[in-house]
Amino acid sequence: MSPKKSIFISHSEPGPAELLESLLRDLYGQAIDVFNSTRASSGLAAGEPIDQGILARIESAAAMIWLATPHSVGNSFWMSWELGVASAKKIRTIPCTCLGLPQTSLPLLQDGRNAPDLGDAQQLAAMLSALGANLGLDDADVMESVDRLLPTKARSQFWGRESPQAIALRALGDRLLVTNTSEDTVRIAAAEERSVGGEKSVEILRGMTLEPAGRRVVANAESLGRNSTVYLEWKDQGGARFFSSAGVRGD
Image (tube, rainbow, N blue to C red; front, side, top):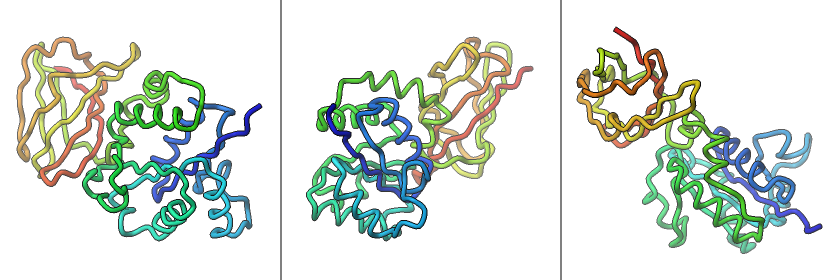
């Protein structure tokens, strides 16, 4: 049996790291070990010296995934230190962005490498596929695993920060009233309806821009289930990214 390949997840915020660990374990199972310092089951042992333990895990890693967020860049001592150690030890490092950090925010850290945005399902799947190929792991249906393990509500946690409901939806016969309840201009980047039958994209909302306290009536919305829930990914006028859910109220 081939020795397990160790993957080190460098991060400062536990939510995205835990989602990524779940995906890696589902895809590659017993072929890998994952080090995630914020989880007791895959992090440091109780009482283990932090710096020595992390150094040992980096040195034994086949690859590091470096999860950059708006908070971590310039603020996380440990992530900067881990990146420096991995670079010095020539550990394969994959910089990734999530929680709305622009990819252009990493010109020096990524050393000319592409930093995929894990908030984009296609980029997430491409990163996981490339990682598996580089480490010589068995082929896996990455997109199927992403869709199965990360329904829209969970996958949105790679996209941005959860926000109080900013968009209200109300069914008016075959039309849909969309209301921006916030004080910011918002642009809906993606919307998916979740029901017992599964998930489906709500194309009539994708790309819609709403002014503060603005509302729009959308025709031909009869395909949207009444009393269902729509998960939304949206941006405010400053480019910050959020996700929220909105129940579709009936007449």
